[in-house]
Image 1 (cartoon, one colour):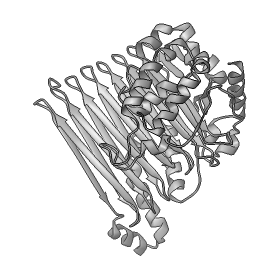
Image 2: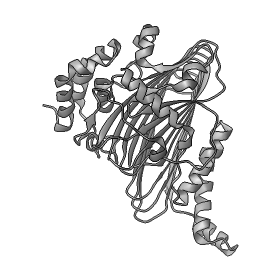
Image 3: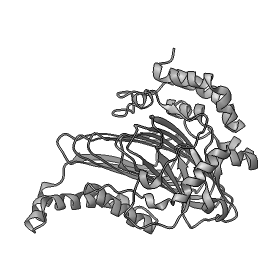
Image 4: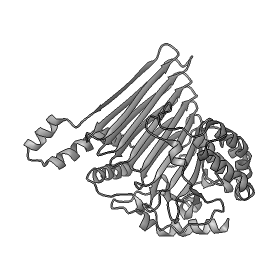
Length: 461
């Protein structure tokens, strides 16, 4: 018998199956029955389970949350949900209100030939074989949160770049969570497929209002063909009452390159599961991330890199600043399979506890099953260097300002790893304001017109 937290979703699926499937394309409906069996068998992880020292996924999904099965449009006001005081970066912008996607003019008419960013429902009409090949094939199946997403997903977003096409201007997908008068669960699904020798820059932004304790369950599946290049930046600036589970799963073929940055600037409870599989010789993965957690916030990241082919390179750097009663957690794993010779793999986690009441759990791991490799990992957790504080104060810098400057410097190498100049400047500014206690989000990147597009698209459904 499934636990109550799981059973409510299984009952929801069975009781509303006809409506759920009527609003979704056939390939999504075909995956539901297996997802229900997996969810019933695995359930949701709890705090203390292996790999979950802090995050309690069962507690995130356990409450009675509303699910928008009828796909009713929410009148979310972007200007009310978040504000921005830093300059825009020039992007091709799409918009997701809870679980409803709107491409708007930028992604509908301004993309070059060979690049497609559209709803999965639209992609099913135009390119069904692509979705059948990759949807629900990359994310780990034996995962309760992923299974829940597959069980209830009714649409999603496809990013597809054809062979040899290189898009220089970044594509931005802005997620807004809120707009309902009851706590809601938003099911979000993203599939990114890059064909041979193609490239794209993708920016994912998460924001929420501070009214309801809403929850998002996001699954991102990425396939990088030989010689392709993806830069992906995931930034969260949500409210303290928001809970987020995000699974990012990547499959890399020969000589592909991935630059992945996951930044949690403000959150309630966040668990990021990242899994990168290097399946082709010469693949390169550079992964970094940072989190700032204070109040009663929890930022938890699990990062797994699987070296399954020879001559691949991976490098991970994650940094946390935890203050007040905040909590942080990082679990990192590098696994080098038998036959993956000449692997180079590095993992580094560094953390600052800015208060005696702050807590941090870190668990770096190496599993190596072949010879002739270069692998290392390390982790360190400490406080702000009192000697540096004394030196700066002796030069007339106030204590609070010196503290902020040192924490900024601590995050510098993660920020410097961002390859988009305008985004790097924005992130540096957001971190500075966050450490100063100023509410800052990047919301002005979405015009009010985008919200009208979302509402229209939902009504057209």
